Length: 110
Image (cartoon, rainbow, N blue to C red; front, side, top):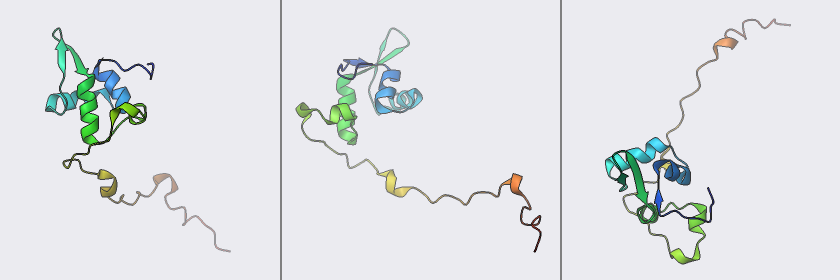
């Protein structure tokens, strides 16, 4: 896909590529109403570029190609957006490796 060309509509796959997420995630967002889409025929989903840009402005997340554009103005952020980066839970300790079981018992004392 040519980065200089911005399509007027996106397929779920093209939008997933732009947002670096799965196509299923985009389809879930459409199903829950987070983003609006329309159908071509009975099955083909399309998302208007204006809807994509509005969502990106509201969420505060912009792809590099859009973020560096001088014509878009300033970013808007939504109070409903939760920053999960700082809420990552501590990882559980790793389980002992089974292939190294009793490795200490095999050591020969000197």
